[in-house]
Image (tube, rainbow over all chains, first blue to last red; front, side, top):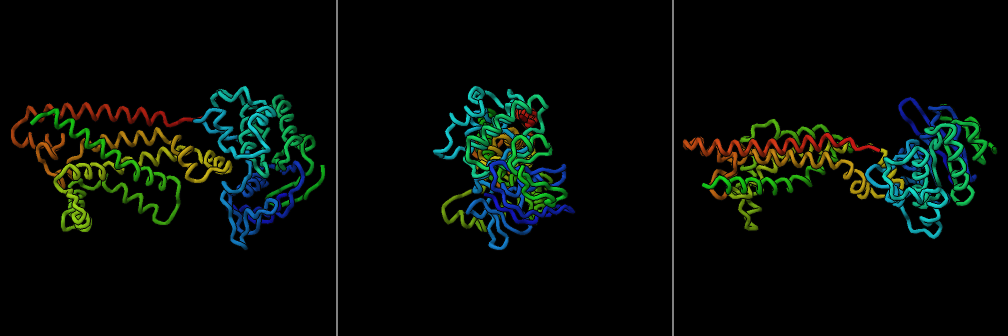
Length: 213
Length: 221
């Protein structure tokens, strides 16, 4: 469960959100510029709210009143950014294992099997297709045994045909792992297919809160 | 005076000086590329100062610091280290004059590294130190190497600060640049010309290597 209650200012833009996220997959939906990515950045600790609090289960990640601000590397948040940002100087295996944490829940075999990246492990990043990059980035995030998985428009960069091929992997992650997912998208069909719950953002404000899909 | 002995001595001193420049050069380069703080411009200016100041002036400042009566020299003397007019002074002059080039090149190299990689690495649980060692530094390596080569080349040609704090003692502090001056002054034009050719060849090779490394900086996925 993620509890968000914060204000974050960026120039003239203000993000103001107060929501509890406890579904398996929660879609953050809205037009570009609505502040969806900013919400993920704040949860991951890459942007600091002006005030408020962010908690993951019992753990306080950020609280302006208690003066808590955990650095990103202590938050246990898996984040697949829109551009996936695989490390270009490491091969697939070392990318996937970069954030490996000792965990009984997740073994490399399990994650590699689920996302079908086992055959890619010895490749260089430059040799991967767009869809393969998405899966490797997903595997890398999962191997860090996150308490929550943040996906920023994981299908935005791929065409409709590839989208159909990647969605099943996301559904597997959703169904096989007990990791809550926060999923940013502006595609209504994706929301219908994968999300349990939806939060609609517009210009930094929640206009529809936690609607069940 | 053996020309090859001078050449070998100069290369050795420049190599030691380059090793000395790297840790502070990488640190300053990283700070300038990745930190925003009050005094940023001041640090940037101070670091580049040796590039534009007369090297002789830098040498005089160093001399006042490390002379037996100077603030640093007094401490060094107490622990029995003598610097002025020894090979250590040669290395010091070279390192101080080469440091700005290392810092600037490292900074440029680090600025080329997309910060998203560092951000993602931190969300994967990597501490800032681990992010630096496994992401930032490897991706900025061409810039770091280019800086090291430039600093090395600058060290080879160091003259002004060297003559102030190390002098031109045959066999103990006489480098290529200083020897060229000493030979020309004493009418040994032939020897001086030979050293000029050696200097030119080494400098050319170093710069070529540095430019080649810099051109490879754009490592991308």
